Length: 152
Image (cartoon, rainbow, N blue to C red; front, side, top):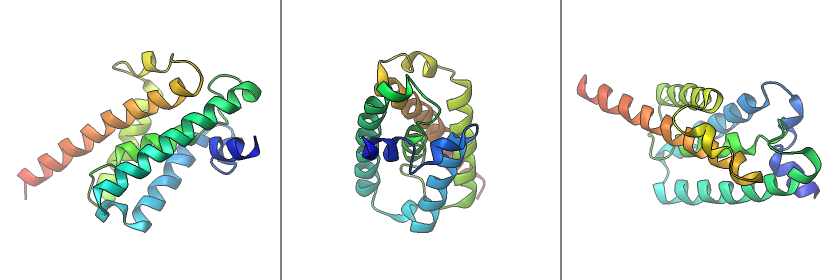
């Protein structure tokens, strides 16, 4: 169970309380930028995102019994959401910033079906709403890339 607690809370970040999700998302952004994942093969990005999503869902399912449904201690879903947000995005600080802001907006406000997906049982709902929020944020980034390309 300790393994799932560590994964679900992203090494304890979930214990921070309010703002833990934003801290987890920021952590992923820093790692993504430093590792230069935006320049990495998209195959690796997709594979790592799928792995994090599977592991995150499994761990969120496991800790549901002790922490309750969608506990604020579970922040691995923000890592999954940011991972989806940054798929196929070139390394660029401004795109990263737009992605973080857009992801947190869609994750917090939960428009366009994000709230509905959250109602899936246990870890499925915990992670699925962040995947959908990440997809919306990904669309926003790619729209910015398209617009920026038209002005260069």
